[in-house]
Structures are given as C-alpha cells and as structure tokens.
Amino acid sequence: MERVAVIGAGPGGLAAARWLRECGFDPWIYESHSALGGQWNNANPLSGIWPQMRTNTYIATTQFSDLDHPPGTAIFPRNGEILDHLEAYARQFDLLANASFDTTLKALEQSDDCYRLTFATREGDEEVEADRVVIATGRYNKPKIPPIAGLDGFTGRLGVLHAHRYKSPDMFRGARVLVAGGAISALEIASDLAMLGAQSVHLAQRRQRYVMPKMVRGVPFEYYGFTYAQAARTPEPDIEKARDDLRRFALRYGGDPARYGAPAPASDTLAAGFTGSQHYLNLVAEDRIRPVPWITSIAGETVSFADGTSIEADAIIFGTGFDLNLPFLSDPMRDVLEADDRGLTLADFTTHPGLPNLAFVGMFAQNGGYITVLEQQARYLAYLWSGLVARTPGQFAQALAEARRERQTDYQDQHMMALRFARLCGTDPAGQVDEDLLATVRTSATTSLIYRLAGPHALPDAEARFRASFDRYGPISDRETADEHP
Image (cartoon, rainbow, N blue to C red; front, side, top):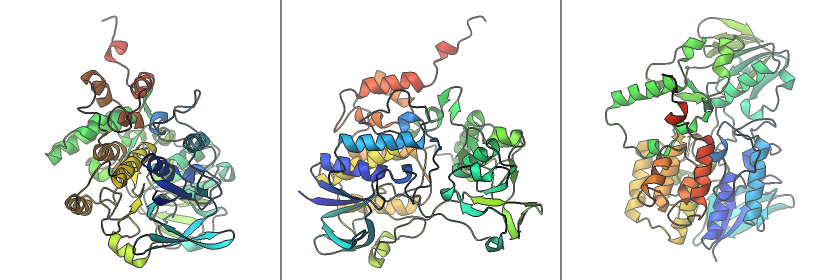
C-alpha cells in the first residue's frame, strides 16, 4: 500500500485523507498545529478566524456530503460549529489514526522513487519518505499589506493589523477605526465594528464592488449566484451581452451601492467585481460606516486619501488579501510549478506532470464556500492516482496550457470549480439521474450532495437528503408567492 504524506489537517487535508484511504492508499496526516481544523480552529496561529465569526456561506455548502450538521445548527454556522463538523468527519473515517501534530514541514525534495520531507517537531527535526505527497496547507495564511507612504510611522494608539489577526471588536470600542480593503473580510470586520461599539468606522477601497447579501427574501444567495445551472451553462459568446446580464443580476440581487451612499461601482461588472456582506450597505446608509478612497499617505495618526481628504485614526485594519505561502518547496520545484506569491501553474489546479505523485488541494483563491469544492478535488485526486479515472500525457499537457490561459491566480467561482472536478470524476448528475431530479439540481445551490447522486461512490440516501435540504433552503415557488386576490 502506497504511503501518502498529507500536509495539513484542515478541510482540504481531511478530505484528501478520507478519499485516498477510500481508494486504497495509506494516508498520513502532518499538521503544524496541535489539533485539526486549519483556519476553522481559531487557536491555530495560522487561523484568521475570530471566535464569534459566522460563515458567509450557508450551511449546506459548508459541509461534506458524508454527514450533515446536527439539527439546530444555524443557516450560517459559527466557526466552532464548522470545527465540530471537521472533528466529526475525522472520527467517522478514523483519519487521525495516522496523524502527527505539532509537526511543521520545513523542506520537500524529490528523489528518484519517492519524496523526502523534513519536519520540525517538538523533539527536533524528523525526516520522512513518502511515495506521494499532498499539500493542503491552505491558501490564506500569509497576510499581505500593501506599501503606503508613512505606514511604518503610524502612531494611532491601537496600531496596525491585518484582518487575519482580528479576533474581537472589544479592543476597538470607542476607537476611530479605518478598515482598508473591499473584499468580504474587510466589509465583515467594518460591519462588526460599526455595530459593536467603535466610535467611528471608515472603509478605504480602491474601487467599489457590487455587494451581494447572504440571503435574498429568506433564501441563501447561493441559490441565485452559485447554482448548478449557472456552472453548466455554455458561456455567453457576446462579451457585451454577458456584461449587461451580469449588471442586471448585480442590481437585482445586491442593488446599486450608490443608492445606499457608497461610491458608484463601474457599470462594467467584470471590472467592478463582487463582494458580499449582509449588513455593510445598510450601515453605510445609516452613516455608521463611511466609505473613503484609497490611502495615499500616513503621518502620525493622520491618514490621507486619494481625494485630498484625511482623518485621524486610532487603528488601521487591512483586509487586503494573502500571498501564497509554500516556503518548503525547493527552488527546482518552484521553477517547475511557476510558483510566485499569487499562485501555481497546475493541471486542473491539482497536479503537474513535471512533478509526478505530488498534488495540491485548495491552493486557489475562490469566491464561495470551499468545503464542497475541496471534497470534489480530493475525490478527483484519489480517483486519478488510483486509476479510477485516467488522464493521458496529452490531456495533462492540454490542461497545463489551459492553466496558463485561464489565469489560475484569479479568483475562481465555487459552482464552476465543483462541477469542473465532478466532471473529471464522472459524478456530474447530468445524464445519470432522471429529468425530474435534474430539474431540481439545476436550480439548486452547489452542494456536495449533488455530486453523490450518481457516479462512483454515489450515496443511497443522497437524493432524499438533497431534496430535504432544497425544500428547506431553496427558492420559494411561484405558487407560494402568488397573489390570491387579483
């Protein structure tokens, strides 16, 4: 039985170990922290999760297909509930039987017939050989703060930190806070502070994105923006029509930020981009968050912006993203992978023919929940290595060429990625389930259960569980909302 070293015990590493074992491998998990969970364990020094954080993805997209969250779990679970889910998953498949904690990968080298790994442990360095290696150390653990004139000399009493280190609004009560960034973390932290006692909250961003809510009329946004049908649809060849359609979608479900008092986003939605927050725009409308242009300079506790205005701030919190963090890769490996701070060049985001028996899980930036996608990627990897699915050298070469064209360093979309891996696995339900079920699948948010309806390792109870989830969370039918008194 081939030994596989799985680096990381977060969702990606656990999913990889589960499916590799299913397909006849001997996975061994190595985790730098003292417990599993990755980002979802807020005691982990590499976690950017704050203790009371709720997910921004709804419950059914934030679970593995093998088990449901227990009754009573919120539609948007607390981070501790996701950790509970990961722990239950590990117990169900006995994934920690071969796991080493407080074990940090320092170096990874390729030899003739295996990989050599050097770990730092509490007892000192340890060397391990493995037939195969899976890197699942997470995409979001090396915070990035952009260079700004005078930042090093900021004298606000609460200093500068990255969103990755934000843990509670308590220390910011009564403080003047500037949040910098326009993606989800920045908007969620700004909202947290505005509702929980900060004296003032400003949000600086380079451009205004369209802001999507978590729920629309009682339905999770994923049922409108991350559906199976959208993933399966042939791309619109007319780019101008695609832009117009996307703008109508943005205005229908998120509204025009300018009507709330935020800056107007570009009419080209592809250029403006999307972000998400349930509260942000309403807090702008209430003047509890004040949007400002990007920062140009800092002098003491005075922060100046691109429009010539300035404010005094006690704290600056940067929600400005992350660099890829793979310090253990050798230089020859980095060259093969074309690795930089933004990403890697991989066939189908997973492997590279120049480094056989090495794989990466979850090393891409993404819009939408990761757990559904990580499960499909882990299955694809296990099926590929076990021979359940086959890829020819020509297909790998084509996939690498596509990787360079499609800019894998850009943000990917959850529903697109899940279907991509499912098609590689042979688990796309299209053509494998009856039309009545497929019609419901088409209008569904992308959940992991969709890809247990058919194909390898289909679950006998998948349809019943999927329909129950759809009935609970899916869009309200026209019949239910019809006006009975015309």
